[in-house]
Image (tube, rainbow, N blue to C red; front, side, top):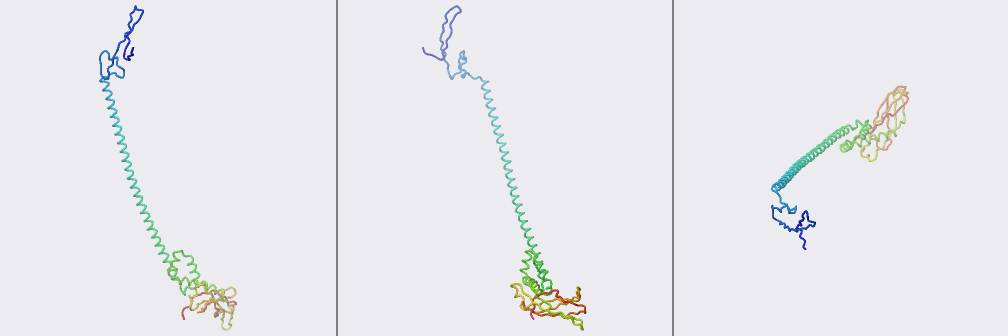
Length: 284
């Protein structure tokens, strides 16, 4: 016997028969056809025919799915486009801000450069005026102020000092030489005699002086130096009279005599050198 998977056994039995018999009925399924006969219920479940309503439902679901997909895709594209446009605008604004910032920075730098130039010009102008004012005050008539001039020179700022060194190097050398030589003359000068003349009510003061020059400045005194010696007569602790005597064309490092005659009363008891001022002699 050959087994047919599509055969059906039918039970044959009567209510009074002690035995049962079965009849094999062969059934044939035709694939690819739609049968609506009595044997339609014998088709396999996966071969069941679709009804028109069921087909329309599946089509509607498919259409709705496609519509939703298209709508979602359009929404994504629109959102992406919006984001891209916003990003583009942000990039453009950022580039404009960077450009404006660079431009402003350049303007600030230029303004700062101009400000520094202006301050430099003002500082140079101020230094020039101060240096010229200092240089113009140096002369033979102001030799007694040499100490003050040297103090001012030493307190100048760098800009003023540079201008002074450029405009009046000779005056600077004279001031330094005057301070140095006057100090050395005060140290080396002495009073050798202080004689009172009773009949004429005068006192004759005699002494010697000498001075040295700072290194490298000997060439500014080709004719020697003029030295002013200030002498006072003392009566006890009080100054009775003062006189300044000029000693001209004094050579360096050479002891030179000087003398002065002062009016005096009989009470004068002492002579004193108060100050010595040095300045280069002029040509005879």
